[in-house]
Amino acid sequence: MNDFNRIFGSGPVGLSISIILLLLSNYLRNTFNIPEIFADHYAIRLAIFIILTAVSIAVVGWSFKSLNPMLRGRNLIRTGAFKYFRHPLYGAFLTFFDFGLAILLNNWVFVCWAFLLHPIWHFLVKREENVLTEAFPNDYEEYCKVTGRFFPRLITKKQ
Image (cartoon, rainbow, N blue to C red; front, top):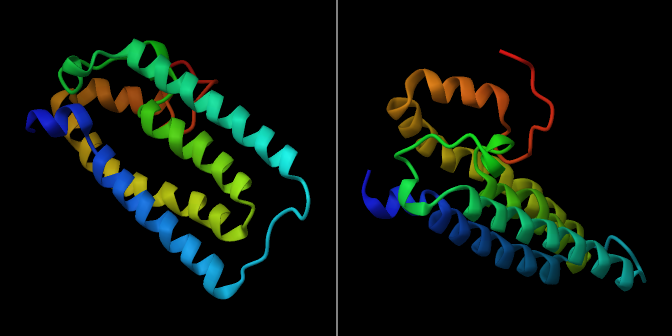
């Protein structure tokens, strides 16, 4: 694995796909006049977006504090954000920010976009996880059993 892939992983490819699908969703909304979710609740939508964006920013900050990018792929980190998420940076956007944005944009096509990103990103990170399984064979498999991929696993069973 080269240094770029070790440090950035699936992020650049996933972000590119996410943006392209967001633009496609906007095109579909405008072309097919897909209905809005809420009629006149901009303040509520904005509040939801602000709260989920704040959670996303907090998780991103926690992720950076939990793992030095230079150690990524070299050490299996199980503390901080990585105690709950295997991919906290991706999870911050997929689990929190994207859904907040979908609510703010107020259209069912954007909610579908946010849901569609999850299986796409699951596919993208499988390669990263395969590399980590090879690098830390038993440790990574055990780690996967007690952490969520993009959703935080707050309750775990004792091994």
